[in-house]
Amino acid sequence: MTLSVNPVGEATDDARVLQSMGYKQELSRSMKPFSNFAISFSIICILSGGINSLSQGISGVGGAAIGIGWLIGSAISLMFALGMAQIGSAFPTAGGLYHWSSILGGRGWGWLTAWLNLLGLVTVLGAINVGTFYFFMGAFGTTLGWEPNFQTQAAFVIGITVLQALANHFGIKLTAFLTDISGYLIFATAIGLTIALLAYAPSWDFARLITFKNYSGPLGGDVWPATQSMWLLFGLGLLLPIYTITGFDASAHTAEETVGASSAVPKGIVTSVLYSSLFGYLMLCAFVIAIPDMDKAAASGGNVFFATMDAVLPASLKTVLYWAITASQFLCGLATVTSASRMIFAFARDGGLPASGALKTVHAKLKSPVAAIWTASVIAILFTLYTPAYTTIVSVTVIFIFISYAMPIVLGGLAYGGTWTKMGPWDLGPIYRLVAVLVALSAALILFLGVQPPNDAALQITLGFLVLTAVVWFGFERRRFKGPPVTSMGKK
Image (cartoon, rainbow, N blue to C red; front, side, top):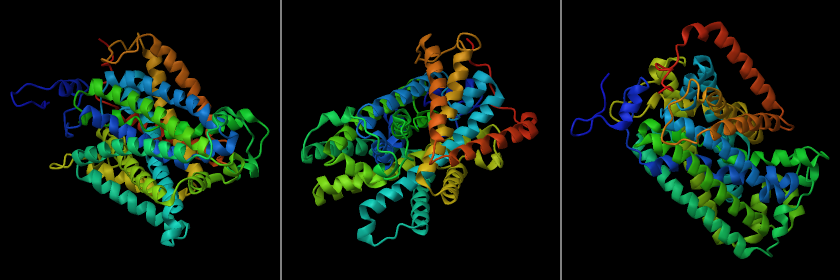
């Protein structure tokens, strides 16, 4: 197997690690550590999920969903990030979670993780782009005379997804450049929005951030069905930060394109979650403080962001912020295409997908997995056409993606110190076992919350997929699928 070499003929450390896992360097390894961080930070994009899903918190228990709920939801995401960082440092491949589960638990677990992660990435791409449509309509739809119907949504989502795929088609250097810009843009816009909201807020009532009120049913614009359970409402509000702070596995999926991956990947995963949690918290706390009337805001339901912006900010400033948010959301989708396509590429490389021969190909000149890029984009479009409801898409996304996150982490907890003794530069030590337990409990909570009404259709979709995968695995793939080429490299 041929190694990538530097100008003096010595193999790079990254290529050596990749070769030890049974793969040769095919993708262009040109991403710097900041770019690895930026791609996860761009997919998390607090200006996408944090805004488009805001009503899930405000129309539940009010300001406390942000002041308290955001911190709890962020802590849950951070647990997953810490677990993924530990494994990503030891096994830095484009397959990411799929490869990790295969090494730590066996090829069957790897195969299931791959499908869950792949579906999670494709559905999150759909959720991001549908959310971008809703935001664009709220910001500019009336001015442009657009009708908020299914046909307009479909045309918009198809259009921006094709543009995102085109940018990815032309290689990781262009993608990394755009996601680097996205990282800076998200920082600047979040800070600008925070300052503007605080500057124009009618008053500063910090008590709102710890105040609970039942806004279920009509009081909250029917975002959640009427219930007397404040615990359930508060739990449902956790879907806001949990959905927003996801997608950080992108740092792992671009490991084979990152210089110094064993250190850069775990750092990219954890820091993207920490910065998103902090800046998202400050931004949304400022939003809650700026709301003129909490009861009216909650009653506006899915329109809570625009209703508040219209009531508080000057038109010219508001327009500038709207364009910056739209651009950030578009780049968020672009980074998600990158992550999803690398997952498809890695799984196909091991023969795990139909038409794997085509999906694992890398363009000779562009060094990008072109077929995988367009496949991810087309599937995401088809999913949004089948399930156009934004909240259902979000619930399905959260369930699939966090279960796929949990599987290798839990398997790692079981294998730690036994079949897995060789760690990477990022090593939590024995505390990793505690992280794995917390991740397992969090995954169960997310599954429960994700299928509550009005998103109970998510349960049908999840159960249907699990039944289908069981039939496919035991009926066909268990005999055919060999898994990654190396499944014992976790030992010293």
